[in-house]
Length: 142
Image (cartoon, rainbow, N blue to C red; front, top):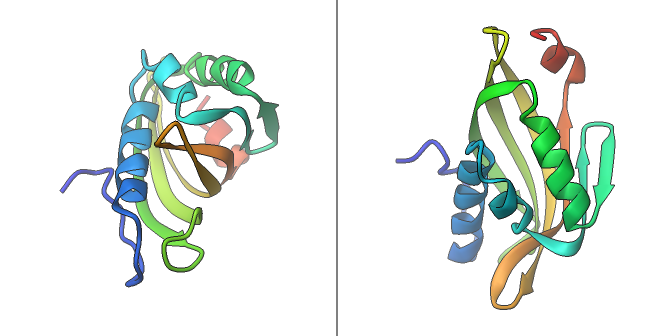
């Protein structure tokens, strides 16, 4: 089983949603995959990363590039995903992320997120992704 495979409640869940999040977190952990990461979102998506909010794919791309400025490696483990009912398009997520920083330090933090997905050209994409994390813990290793 991949580190990107999550547990789900015992309700009907679209297999495309499971595959989407496995690929999304794998992409998130790939340093050079900036464009692919941004393409996981709709053109007008909102991304909230802790206290930073961006809107639209170009702002998401800029945020994504900035998120790798001090990071040498990143490893997400999305442990559990909770759809809002059977075959829902809105989910809550919970997991951990380990960082290897360019200054040689390492850190692991717990995060939670809320996501809303839509079909766009036959593919799932997020139009809202809001990540909740402890920025004090994240900044402690800088």
